[in-house]
Length: 44
Image (cartoon, rainbow, N blue to C red; front, side, top):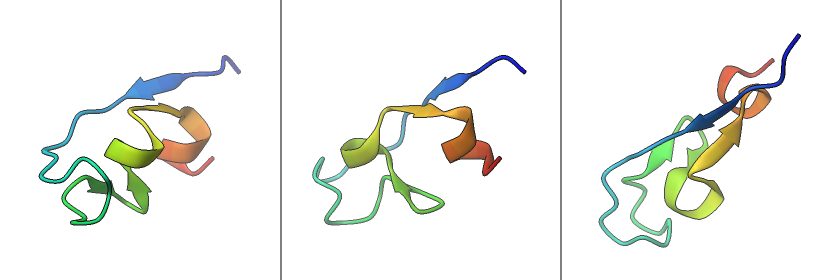
């Protein structure tokens, strides 16, 4: 298949991953992203 990437946005209160508001199923958008591979997002 074709590799894919996702760009995500979440409300970020602290911007450091401390408060957890940017959590997206174990991924912290503010710390680990904002661009994720399809494997990270879909668990493939």
